[in-house]
Structures are given as structure tokens and as C-alpha cells.
Image 1 (cartoon, rainbow, N blue to C red):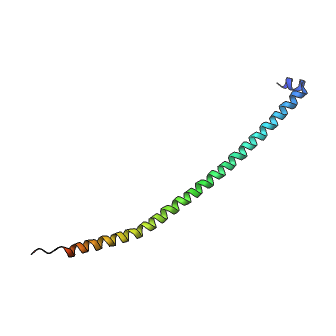
Image 2: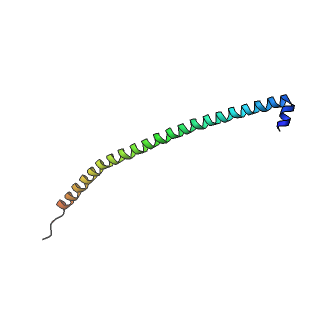
Image 3: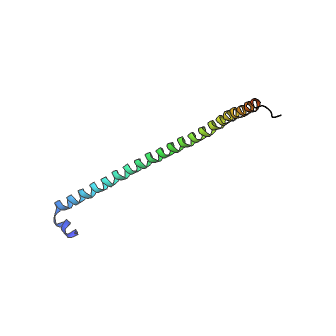
Length: 88
């Protein structure tokens, strides 16, 4: 192939231009993949933080609700005991 390149200067120029375009395209693809990787990492980090925050808030919030439900259940059982007549 070297022999063909040296015989025709126009062909050599076209091959050099083709190589240059190929390098530029490869560089653009690498830049785009780097940017995409950065965006995906940021999205995963943000999603993880939101998920952990949601779990923490739901755990803290559910602890208070259980106390209220338990208090109502205790009050209901005490009221039922008072309503029942004692056996002679």
C-alpha cells in the first residue's frame, strides 16, 4: 500500500485527510462518552441520596405513628374492659 500512496500524491493527501477525520471523530466520541458517564454518575448519586432520605424520613415518621396507634389500641381495650359486666 505504501507503493500506491507514494505514486499518487492526491491519494496520499486523501488518506491523510481521512486519518485526520477519523482521529477527530474518535476524540468527539470519547468526549461524549465521558460527558455521558459524568451525567449518569451524578444521576445515580442524586437518586441514592433521595432514596436514603426517603427511607430515613419514613422510618422516623413511622415510629411516631406507631405510638399513636398503640395509644388508641390501649385506650380501646381499657374501654372494653370497663363495659363488660363482671361475672358473679
